[in-house]
Length: 343
Image 1 (cartoon, rainbow, N blue to C red):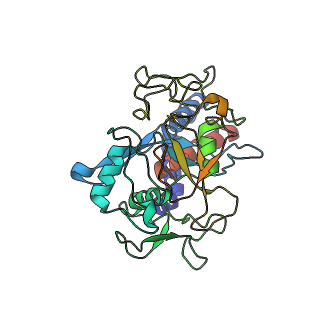
Image 2: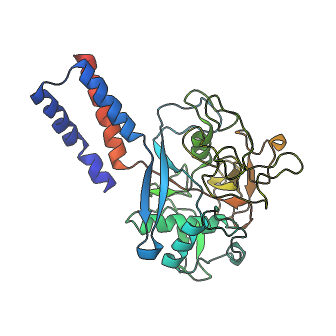
Image 3: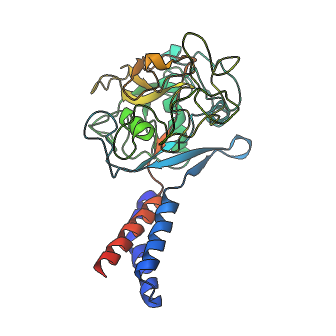
């Protein structure tokens, strides 16, 4: 579907422009209005649907542009992509399991825990990196896309094991052997995650706050602030733990809880280029247990765990390539702007 939409892009542009020529409405004022509408529509949040019946769930995404980037460090991503507005919840995880079946594999200690914090809209927690990878593969295969991550053995059995893609596999990417380049959904790399959280179009901020806002502790009910620990005590909620996703402040690029709530798995290995199955994976963002003084919520801070580790302070969110409609709208906006400059 994605490739077909891109192939038809030129034809859509031609029809779009001809309609304006026919009506003689390509004037500077009209062009500015059209471009504004196209770009606004292209940048609104979107939601994708998975599963059927009682096990149907949605995932909301925000669009992240590849047009500008930092000059060094984390956050350099040259392509457009989408990232989940929220962390994956227990409800989404439960509906996935109901549709997918038993989530197990090798090593067995990557699959022997259940979420400790059990609220429906609480981010799912206590999951290994391998479990997150199986969730993402379901998002792809259940919607007709290529699986992002390679597993050998039999799904649902103890021999089901993650391995990096091989150079002989279709979709192999030498720069990132973990992810198949033809996948639609994936866990964000550390660069993708950092850009979505902290990039303001000019620089990587220390915190993921919007312009004019500061990092403040929330309470889980007011709709403002973040879920972290204030000093040696002072949890944001009582009892302490992750709050329902979206309970705090909206962040710089439209996401929630990229600071605090739960640490989040990155697709990337912690050590650059260390693409072995069992290599330690990066974590970002801090959790409800983190403190500002430890810098866990800040852009420079990194953490890591073994991919089999199941920890109640760790969850994940997913990312995706842009929807074809978004690419088309952005392309139309660019074409119309070029026509304006030629006029």
